[in-house]
Image 1: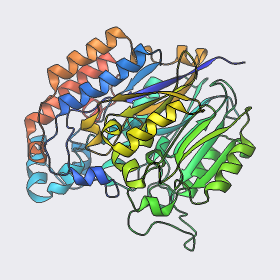
Image 2: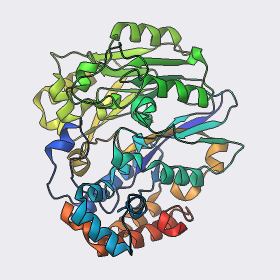
Image 3: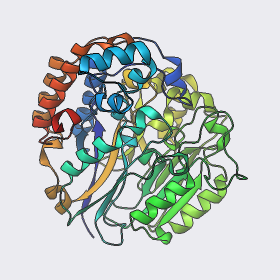
Amino acid sequence: MIQASEYNFDGLVGPTHNYAGLSVGNVASLKNATGASNPKEAALQGLAKMKALQDLGLPQAVLAPMERPDISTLRQLGFTGNDAKVLFDAAKKAPELLVACSSASSMWTANACTVSPSADTNDQRLHITAANLANKFHRSIEFDTTSRILQTMFNNDEHFAHHHALPLGDHFGDEGAANHTRFCDNYGDKGLEFFVFGKYAFRSSMPEPKKFPARQTFEACEAIVRLHQLSDENTVIAQQNPEVIDQGVFHNDVIAVGNGNLLFCHEQAFLNQQETFDTLKKKYPGDNFQIVEVTNDQVPIEDAISSYLFNSQLVNRPEGGMMLIAPGECQENRHVSEYLYQLIAADNPIKDVKTFEVQQSMRNGGGPACLRQRIVLTEQERAASNPAVFMNNDLYLQLTQWVSKHYRDSMTAEDLADHQLLLESRTALDELTGILNLGSVYPFQIA
């Protein structure tokens, strides 16, 4: 048996974290638009979760944020002059573009990419495809920098294969690991990779949501399967329920989460739910595939969305069994808190629930699962990776000091036009690339 471990690569919240309501279809994002955010608190909350999970024995690492405001994109859109003039003109003539080019949405690293471990791929390398995030402009401008960061973290062709993001446009909309789950008995085993999509791009007669956009396409899932050299026997592609997308379930990880041999989901998660379950059980390469299905009577859809119950992290406990890492909002919702009490008392692999306060992320529409990218590494792959990005006590202390030094306590959309904010952000990121040994990955460093 190949020994491998799953690492949670959590996104560092960027210095321009703000509430702008950019994500149509994301109820929390729209609800909190125009409010004042706290970038420092957001980053420290994320780091505290990382450190707590590390202390529980769960390997952690970090992904760096984007350079924001994105001056390069604003120049591409016709704004000229020095950086201060670009910001001033964008704020005056196209404030919606400035806000979009200043989003700290890369903090939700579940959307950064899709990763297939080497145990699953034909060439026995770990495959990574940066997500194009084509459905939202503010996210579609992330993948170039995301790719550079990932390539510096996993810079060894013998072990890692990097793929360019899929072509931009509606037909190949790819939202990364937010719509991808891997099942296995042990992380080093050959697993079953589960892809979930919202619509068919080339089949107009098929069901799709009517109110909110379906961000992931069937065609994108198929493309990732081909790029990552996955076999049909170890792949399942299923459609998300269009009706719950229209209620605010913009990604599969808002309605389902999986780990090991367990799928934890709502009864309305998938379009053909029982058929999906049957296919997963049939194709699962391990011994005993299990499903915990939550009924609408137990947790109504609106409560699942508002609490982000299913946007929890489902992880293995070092002492055995599994643990749900849930947002604090799950304790505040009566239906959800009562259900979780019953869940850990029942006969299933989930033996514990721990809640974490990540309100700054939650108010912008992302829970604990949004904040992390799961990457399975063998011992050889871990040794071939950039060691500076893996969490330990020294790195945690260094990053908390870095945040405290560089981040603001309050941020509104009006602040984004401040040239001083751009300078602060670049100074912080320049220092961060030194801490994480990333080299020159940001446009301002490359220019």
